[in-house]
Amino acid sequence: MQVMDYISLLFRWFHIVWGIVWIGLLYFFNWVNGPFAATMDGDTKKKVIPELMPRALFWFRWGAAYTWILGIFLLYLVFEEGKVYLSNPASGSAGSIFLFYSFLIVPFIYDMLAKSPLAKNPKVFTAVGFVLICAVVYLVQSVFGFGYRGYVIYTGAMFGSMMAYNVWFRIWPNQKIIINGVKTGVPADPAIVATAGIRSKHNTYLSVPLLWMMINSHSVAMASDYAWLILCGIILFGWFVVMQMYKRAGKVKGF
Image (cartoon, rainbow, N blue to C red; front, side, top):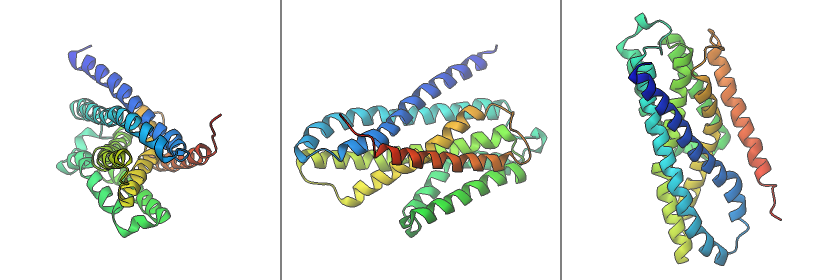
């Protein structure tokens, strides 16, 4: 093995380790802490939240940062140095390369849509988002010549970038205000609470399909001209699974 192969293996390992830290805490916040916090009275919240949440959010936000950063390194090592993201490497073009790295601007487009009147109707927002995601997957596969591994990891990078953006620019800043409000007894603006909550929920829905992309992007077992449709189906199924988990989380009770 060459030095770059060892570096790639090391990056993959810690990419997964930090991903577990990040996503594990995401599920804790949404499926455990959320329903639990609703049972606490004001005095209990003043004791528990300022002690628990800063600790949990420390590992949460840095888990997101390191997962994303290591993912970018892997993206470069595997799909730029290795030249394996195109179904036909000879078909590479400036447009294809630009599109491959355009996931860096996707979080800003998502953020704009999430703050628009469109987001006031969750069903419409979800439907529009799903159509846009599938359109991008189709374009990178059919128009820009990305191979199966290429468009799967591209979609994963797109999802991961939106999630990391949410953590650092929407969830963490708002949570600091919320925690301070609980501590001082001056509640945060309901809009701030709502933004932190909905962005965390968006991340939870994005995470399950993302995990599929993380484990499936290095296999060609499903590669075909229509595999992009299967990927869209996986995304939809992942969202259905998350919806069922939310329903179950609200029914789990303490002793």
